[in-house]
Image (cartoon, rainbow over all chains, first blue to last red):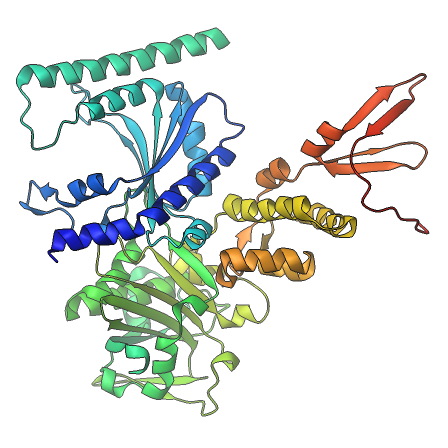
Length: 202
Length: 342
C-alpha cells in the first residue's frame, strides 16, 4: 500500500471517533455559551477525509517540502468548531469563556498584518481536546480548532470557501482585487453594525 | 529493558533551593552532568521509568504563550530529540529552573532526567528525589556518580516528585504529561504547586470551569436517574455541600468518597476512567451557581418543597388565596412517603 493510501485508511478509521468528538464539542460549547448574548450559531465538524488528504498533501512554499511530516498528529483541525457572533464586540466575551474552559496552545486574531490588504478575519484557537471527550470517544487526536467570527466574517469566509480557490491556483489581478474588495466590505459592514449597536444602547 | 523501552540519555543535578538567588550564582550552586546509561543503578531506575504512564495520578498541560510555544516544553523536547550538546544544555536549563522554583521549605534534591524510546514513541521522565535519603550523588572529575542509599526500596514508601511526557517526534507532541507527587499523594494534597506550576510551568488538564462542569453534569444526571427519593435526597445534599466549597481544590474521587452515592461514582468511573477522576481542579463558583440551582419553598406551617430549579418551575404552582396565604399545587407521582421524628 502506498503512503497516501495508508494515510487515507488510517484517517478513515479514526473518522467516526472524530464525528463523535465534534458532536460532544458542539454540546459543550452550547452549554458554555448558553447565557451569552448574540450568538448566531455554534457548529462543529470532523474534517472530511477528502479535505484531510488535500491538506496533508500541501507543500511548504518556503522549503518546497511537504508541510506535514506526520499529518495524523500535526493537522490540528481534524475536529473544528465555529462560533458565529453578531458584532465585533461580541467576540471578546466568547474568547474569554473559551480560554477559561479549554487548555489552549494557540490564541490569535487572524487578520492580514498589512492594513492595506483585506482577507479572512476571525479569532482562532487551538485547544487541547478536553480529556473527558477524548476518553468517551476514544479519539486519538490531541487538539481541536475553534474559530470565532462575526456574521459578516463568516458570510465572507463561507462564500470564499465555496468558490474553492486552491493555494496553487493563480488568480488574476482583477479576481484578487474583487476578493479583497468583498472582504473589505465585510470588514466595513462589521464596523458599521458594531457602531449602530453601541449607539442603540446609549 | 523491561516493557520494550530502550534508555537513551540520563543526566542528574544536585539542586539546592535557590528561589530569589541571582541567575549568575546558579552555575556554581547547581551541580551535575550527564550520566552514562551503563553507570546508573538500573534496578532502581528501570522500573520507575517503565512505570505505566496512565498510572501517574495527575494530567497536566503546559501553559502556552498563545502561539504554540512553552519554554519548558521546548527544553524537554530538546532533551528527548536533540543532539548530545542540546540535551546537556537543556537539562542544565531545567535544573536551574527547578532550583529557581524551589524555596527553603524544600531540602536540596537530586534532579534526574531519563529519556527512552519504544518503537516510534519517546518518553522523558523527570524526578526530584530528596538528596541522600534514597540516592546519593557525588560530583567526581568524570561527572556525577549516583548510588542507591536505601536497600529497602519500595516505590510507595519513597517521597519523590515525578513528571512523565511521551509522544512521537512531531512538532505537536509533548503538550501534555502526567505528574506524581508521592509526598502529596499520601497526604491527600495535590501535587506541589512549585513542581507543577513554577517548575514545569504547567497546569492541571482540567480547568476549573470544565472540572466543575463534569461534576455538576454528573450530579444532574444522577438526580434525573435516581431510583429512590433517598438517593435523590443524597445527591441534592451533596450538591448543597459542594456549592459551599466554591473556590476550593478538589478531585471527583475525593468528593465521591465523601459525598456521592456509590452508583454515581461507578458510572463516572466507567465513563471517564479513574485517572481523570483523580485529577485536581478548583470548584468554579460561577459554574456551580449556574448549573446547580435548586429552589425551595417553605411555608409557615412547616411544610417544605424543594427541587431542581428547572423542574420546580414546571411542576410547582403557587396560587395566592387571601391575606398573604397561598395554595401550592405540586404535580408528580408519589414515590415515597415518610414519617420522621424531626
